[in-house]
Image (tube, rainbow, N blue to C red; front, side):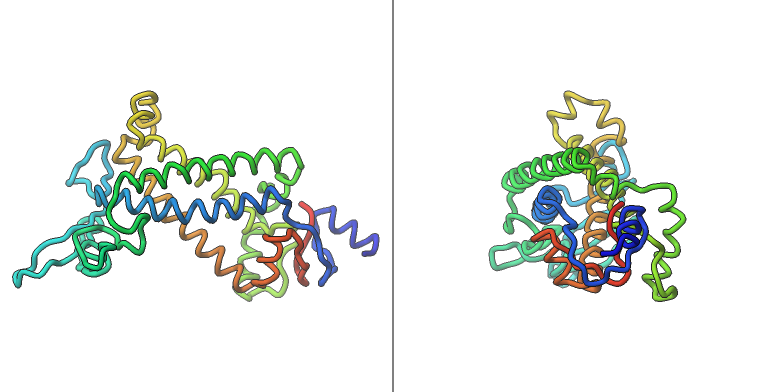
Length: 286
């Protein structure tokens, strides 16, 4: 690499080193990435299992049908057949065989919000769902905290944190993704849209998921009632927790699409071995 290329790399600009291999992700980042992936999968599935025990969300401090945001139910049609329904802000649609009345995990169907193939365990078991959820909630918290400490100690956290100049590059970066701009704005290891997304997920979504999850524990509710009150009560906390789960799923879905469309094997290799092959518009450094 020339001295000019080195200068560009460490000034946060783009480098013209297409095809060069760089060590992009350390072992702590890679371990955290895969623990988060597994933990979020188990937390979503076990969370849906827990949700099945009370298949509704209320925008209220206590259970209040008048302020129901989301509800799943099973009713009998005039012909006697069971019908599954989903209600969102009072608007109800039939969702038989998918939500409301669906796969029970034992070869049949029964009244339950989410089907067995989406929950962990499959058959309805609130106690087992809670065990899975609690264990992997701790796994998520420990790996999240360890990653932040490791990144701060190694100095790589600064590559991830949004800087004032990054906000000016968000729209040009979006134009590049939409193929309305030939080149992205100069950036380092992460482009400004990646930084913003990672900042929201790591510094906003994860902490709020942990805190709202804590408020749903009777023990925590009794010991720290102010925390429950902060989120509007336990029922409101359930709504926030579920909403954050949906937003996080949306992030992981978008993340997966970008991994698939920007070089699947290169991205996967970097998250397994740490080594990444730079493309024409990839930068290195902060």
